[in-house]
Amino acid sequence: MKRAGRLMAAAVAVVMCMGLAACGKDFDATGYTKSVLDANYHGEYEDYAKFRDLSEKEAKAEIEDGMDAQVDSAFAGQSISDESKEKYKTAVIGIMKLSKYKVKEAKEQDDGSYIVPVEIEPVDAFSTANDVIEKITKKYSKKGKDLSDPNVLVDILVDALNRGIKKNTYGEAVTVEVKVAQDGEKAYGIGEDEVSALESAMFPGM
Image (cartoon, rainbow, N blue to C red; front, side):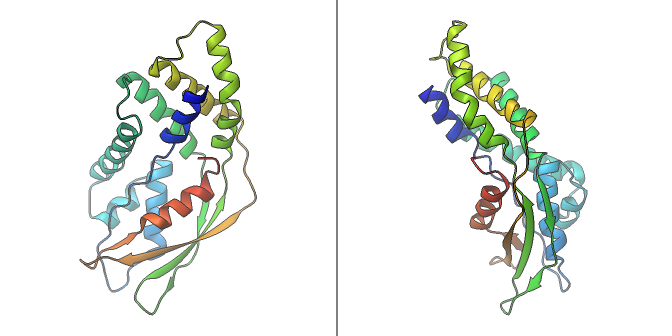
């Protein structure tokens, strides 16, 4: 059970891919922020592709390649099959699609950056998965499953995540202020700290 719990803690940290958007005189920070969320959480790539000056196919590949890299990193050093990784990724995508948010009007700052308020209804699926993982682990043990097999632990994790999806409810709305700023090349992007704040608010228990 402890190994499954540690695997849960390590594996659920799938971070958003945040491609930089070209700068412009009338940069739409609100639209850019929404496009990043829509692409990563809901699989909607059209607007993200426009901000990144990519085709939708290229934008989709960018997001999916980023997630694949995160999954590979989460399971690094473990003898986990590609099939198990795909099952895990499918479960995480299912939780991501539960996300509810409203991106509000950006406020330009004196330094040229923007503050974008994002109202979020927290998803409790990860918390539910954490709550049931011990029970699921005991069930697998009683069935004679080898808990030392990392692929079995992924099955336990996926089972827990899917139960979290099925039983999901939403918490009281909270607002996270996201800073969208230019880098050294004058392209706009969202910083890693901002992303961590968004994901912590969006998916408590992750």
